[in-house]
Image 1 (cartoon, one colour):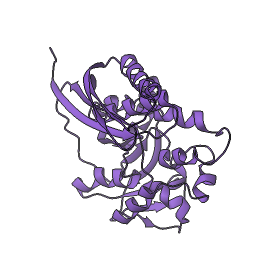
Image 2 (image 1 turned 60 degrees about the horizontal axis):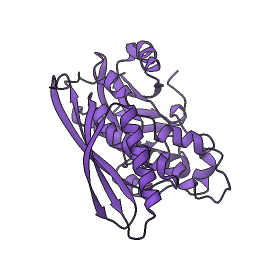
Image 3 (image 1 turned 180 degrees about the horizontal axis):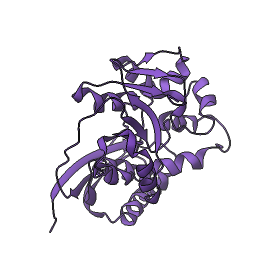
Image 4 (image 1 turned 120 degrees about the vertical axis):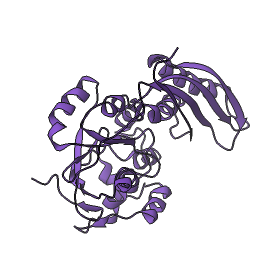
Length: 289
């Protein structure tokens, strides 16, 4: 028996890293993220596996093993699944979770803050794994972010001072911000230098490792670039994310308490901007102070 209400989500991703077990963990974390940021706890799931002809059985089984380990560690049962032929190795899940009640977020107000919980740039950094370096110097940093579950979303959804919660998807950070703000007709200023990033990301951005989807995302929604940021910086807002950071809008007076509560959950809080003005803007600064 489940108290409250059931929620469901489905997601499927292509293999984005060469290590199959890590890929499996990433796919599982990515599929569960939508449940967490809806205030729910994943309970059961079905696996969706796309396998190209000629794929090594060992690669497939290691991918499944990684996914199963993630689900087991987070108390989620795999009840079944379905396998199809595909052009590239794909792994995903249909996930069912529960939450105590339907979410009803408070009105967003001028002066509220926008927060993130993880570095932005997974698309850029994943592409940089193909840079030809014998051992990528930031691979373990990237992998630990990609497999980290967004369990902090449950805490945020149930906090009285939180106005909206989502996760950053393949549409990028800018789209996530617009998604939270547009329904209430508000806008935001983002402080670029406050955005959490991966080590040495600038090098890979300048060398052009952004996925093509970052450029397409930018065509859909462009923030006003007030300080004339170079394009290699600006594109970070449009970089597609896998198991991306939680994005939330919170009351300005709750930052200290939320920072402490999230830290106890193993989640960091980064303030990246503020609700203000009549347009979406990005400024090259660390904060309004």
